[in-house]
Amino acid sequence: MSLTLYDYALDENGYKVRLLLGALRVPHETVAVDLFPGAEQTRPPLIDLNPLGTLPILVEGETVLRDAEAILAYLARAHDPAGTWLPHDAAALGETMAWLVFAARDLHAATLARRTAMFDAPGDAAALERAARDAFRVMEDHMVLRGLSGGLWFVGGAATVADLALFPAFALSRDFGIDHEAYPALRRWTRRVRALPGFCTMPGIPDYH
Amino acid sequence: MDRVMDEAPGWYALALSADIDPATSAGTRLFGHELVVWRDAAGAAHVWEDRCPHRGMRLSFGFVRGDHIACLYHGWRYDTAGQCRFIPAHPDLEVGPMIRANTHPTREGQGFVWVWWGSPSAPADGPAGGAPTPLRSLHLDAPAARVLETLDAAPAADGLVRTSLGGLPVLVALQPLCAGQSAAHILIDGPADAFDSADRAQAARACTALRRAVEARAARGIAETRAAP
Image 1: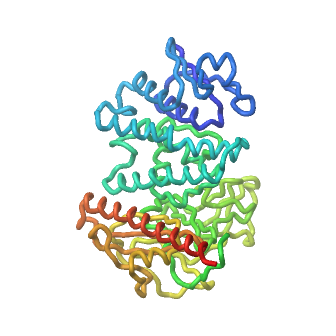
Image 2: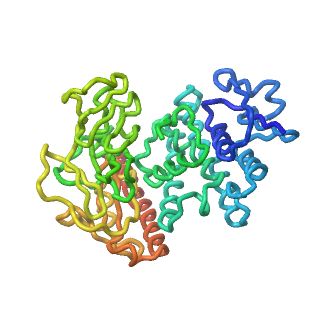
Image 3: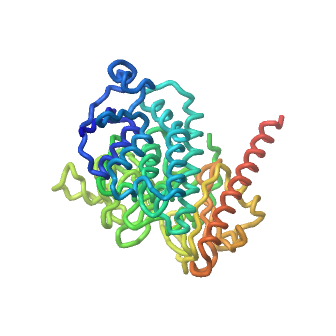
């Protein structure tokens, strides 16, 4: 069954999905969408696949999915027989979902801040940056606590889709003027993510490892 | 806008030693000056101006290979003395002694990475000794003075504040980042096996409570300044 990802190279939401496809080594094809400046995803034929007019979109057989976090959950269930990327344990699944929601909701400010900085998209850059800083602080405090009990990942003993959903916004934060100075625990965590098997970079995330 | 800060000479902690892994770098600031803290593969820590002499790119965006730190822009590589040793665009060039990064006297002791600030040469004595248990570095939107007021404590002769957080004895080293921001590098004062993970978690939660209190105090101070005629 062929798997197609509608994606834009500079979009961190598509990058979340690329990270998991790389980790799971799932064969797929990518359709490059002109998100900026063309906004191709808001017109037919893509608007018929996703009425929200957003990227990424994943199509596998009859299944059509939007929103990176939902796609991550689907891919983990469908293509990770070991079941580590989306835990089965109820508590770990709940915690993973909480971070997926956080990535989609709280870190959206980081996505918008980056679009404001890079594509001149409309938005209150200062307010978006403040919101992104608040979100990074929540992540830093969490990884400090995890580290004090020997935890290396956001949830449980191995990398999950939560780590992949949270990684791009922080790794790309210098694109919109937030340095990593204030986040030593996250800085060390990004190195772990970068060392995952199948890891790939995107523009803005240097390829030096 | 940063007002001019009083850059008192001395040793300043810039990081917990445990947070700078071998062959990694981290950017930071002291009195608004951008610095890179990096550790070579052999384990020695270095603090330099965070600036590649070539095009001014921050070295903390680059990467460490063995005993060299390399700039992300064009891959210029510097040895532990700051001397440029390799320029990828001119691989056969023996780089002249004029191409040097600006280095600062660096020491490691008591669990912190320290830089000497204030005059070109550091005093012979400086921070040294055993490493207590790392807790965390806390970055605050408030000057270091607000942290001291909130803790109701003052640094000892060695620059460290001794107090307690969450019922545990801690050592706090303050780093003035710029006029309105500071970092508090915090260790638990004792060997790692003396505390379990619940103790450490309790102390870590006391750190976030401290940050709330310090930032609230700083925000009140700003409001009062604005209200003054």
